[in-house]
Length: 421
Image 1 (tube, rainbow, N blue to C red):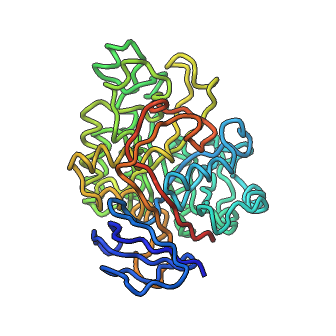
Image 2: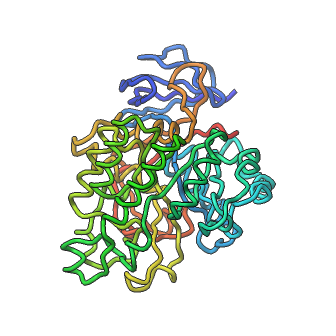
Image 3: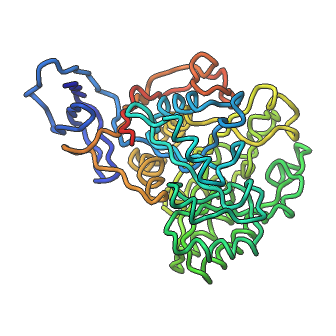
């Protein structure tokens, strides 16, 4: 029997809506007691003084990218799982744009054969591709993928509206989550940053906000007509937040998410042309970021996703306009969000935790258990005051494409308890 006693830890539980100091006893990966003070301590129990530490449900990531298979120089399954657990994530949903892509049941079978999921690692879920080769042209065998155990369907890329209409009709009876990125590729053109005063000032091609809002309006019209529930990925503009809010007020069956970096940074941060800040969708203008922060806090945007996108040093060390879009984030998101939103008093601790744990799980059609006796210990212990430097030695991810490389952060995960499958 393996027992751990966390003494006087701050317990954040979005499931029950509680924020309290308590002693928490964990035995063989199950919570056995949560009390103001536990005096009856089993023999051979490991006791930890947790004053100043935070215990919450494990974090859940809605969508991220894996290097393996096909791009192992960017990220292997092993490094991805280590990065996730180091960042406090106990569930991770992977987009299908690997090589070969996850567009058929045999690809999923190969992943299972690798025996990735054990009691000591996060639970890995796979989004099944909507189209063959993730190319947006021909539908995959959706029913076969559903039976093979995909968590839901997503290409992670824009789709033609005619094809999307058929997809919504075919997917309705399958009862699996569907995640869509609303973006008009033609309106986006060759834009590499959000269009506005800063794109003119920095001399970079602008990607207009209407590339998102026009596509999003079309998606919402299809959802209203067909009725298939949809998750809207990567909301990145003020107008996008407004459209989601209007659609929810009309009762449309939608959820929405934005990425963590769109809450922290905006086009003002691109003045140094750092290629690690070349993202897709691009960072918004300051008004976009403010609308996203408010939209997430109010529940208009349901969840915060990481969209972890590893690239090698050689791939990212190019001119801003030529850099592939994406940045890593599994190990960095919690401390940076905590310092920016909670330590400043803008958000409560429970509000943040809900947006990175219970709400993403709901968007995946799942749930997390309350931090209570007889429940599995799917938990993360976080020290909001621990300082550390982001470098090759401290990062578990195989790639280091992040603007915080070489910088000192405050806040780090101390331990993560996973339940496996």
